[in-house]
Amino acid sequence: MNPLALQLNESIQASSNHIYDMLSKLGKELYYPKEGILSQSAEASSRAKKYNATIGIATEHGKPMHLQVIQEKLSAYKPQDLYPYAPPAGKPALREAWRKKMLEETPSLQGKSFGNPVATNALTHGLSIVADLFVDEGDAVIYPDKNWENYELTFGVRRQARLINYPLFNESNQFNSAGLKEALLAQKDQGKAIVVLNFPNNPTGYTPGPEEGKEIVAAVKEAADAGINVVVVTDDAYFGLFFEDSLHESLFGSLTNIHPRILPVKVDGATKEEFVWGFRVGFITYGHESADVLSALEQKTLGIIRATISSGPHPSQTFVLDALNSPEFSEQKQEKFLIMKARANKVKALLDSGKYSGAWDYYPFNSGYFMCLKLTKVSAEELRTHLLNEYGIGTIAIGEHDLRIAFSSLEEEQLEDLFDLIYQAVQDLTQE
Image (cartoon, rainbow, N blue to C red; front, side, top):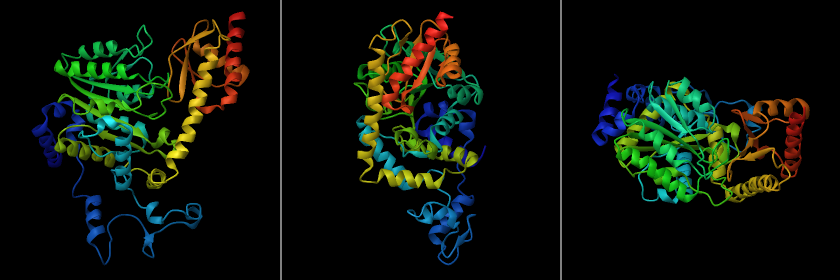
């Protein structure tokens, strides 16, 4: 094993054997090179006053070389904020701005110890880092039966985890914290589990209420009290789009620093929060009381980034940072939030109107981009293909009876026509 990896492991073990035991075999072997090209280039950038012949970019007249056909379209930005490689951890100012935003939006983080966000190539990359750092073949990865299908690829296919699902909703149509606790406590003999919490949930658009949030935290803590090391990942992809009286902050805050056997990991980003899907700017943040543990996990994270993508895209990081610092940012974001909220409220009003009675039920939703119909008369795939072939309408079939509707992608005035046509399609299929 590389000496740098050994040093990081020893640093983690000195503060927490539990965190060390959470690491995968790959996680234990990871390190960030201190004597490679990047570190030598960083040293030269501050000390090479005459000539800097280190990093592999081209310069011209003291600026990064670039093509005018590109720069003329990006003339609001300086070439040095676009063309050079971004640091593997992300632009320092962007990391600081995102940390400040986290503290403002999740008040329960105040006074707690957590790391500086590390920039990722959006959220899937952040989840992939979690998988590499903490998941070995056979490890239990626990998440609800209503989930984003990419979890299976990220944790199951790539890392050969045991994927354990529990029903998202209980009989009261609230978050099934009892199911989560049961799945967790079943890992007592293994002594380790990875939990993924995704709120607002994709595909249902559900976020638990404050009391449900306390039950989730209590379930995780009970597992830790039982001797299980728990990595808790808050997949906060749609964070901030809370339209009703649900939790309005990330559970990362409530989970941070509550137990030595719990490691909260927040995966989030500008992707959906700031409506910049193609920019691919995300973050991964660790919560722990030990500064040494946080530093070592950051170094191992940088090792993964260096070994896979080297660093994230510089222009989009610059664009996001510029937006976060803009005095118009909050007002413009609120405008978009109100549009999304109005769409969600319109969908709920339509579904509660009684005009589609008997064709479907729907799962609770109060946030995010989506909602899910629970079909009662036809299969989801049959309805999806009929809608596509006969009405030119695209939806997502999930399992046997669930149909996901992205109200985020339709205007408010289009929603009634959409659901009328879905209802008509159900009538077509049941009358044949």
